[in-house]
Image 1 (cartoon, rainbow, N blue to C red):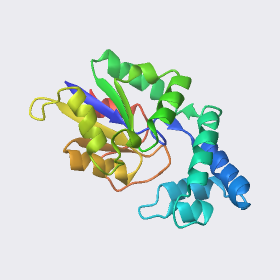
Image 2 (cartoon, rainbow, N blue to C red):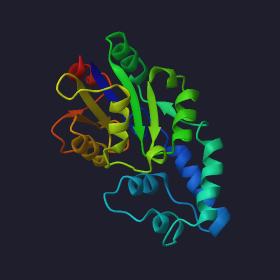
Image 3 (cartoon, rainbow, N blue to C red):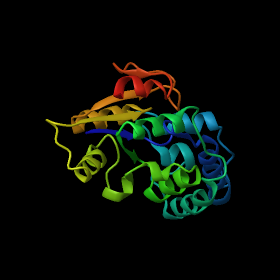
Length: 209
């Protein structure tokens, strides 16, 4: 058995526009702050060390009002502009046709992930779609990966598993879980020093099949 676990934002789909709109909605409505650029917001999300409450809202922690407002706004916004990266749909179906098991592990809340992937008509291709809220642990913790592998009765000696992502947290999560990983550079992070780098979704087929 082979299992491929995908990150979502920046790997399967582009959600940058909607994230930016919702962050700026909270900035304006809750704090009367000027909007941030999409580039700034995406770079902040992908920083190794970051303080997103301060970067986004100039607060030391996420205030409940801001968190609730973002989640309510983004739940509606997240299906307005997302799109699958070119070649993702075909790649997923080819993997399935070859008997590969597919799942998603994202730091986004599970309800957003399922809503967005359903909207893009690919949710049914995955056995498990899990967000960090499901187990109260985000990447680079290996817990989401371990949860997925357990659902498959995964045997490390007999089976093979890969994590595909666009962030060092994805790679560290895979390392911490003891599985293979490949860094996707078509998404939010355009370069990487990871030992396996894939330039297009179709390249996934070359390393998995």
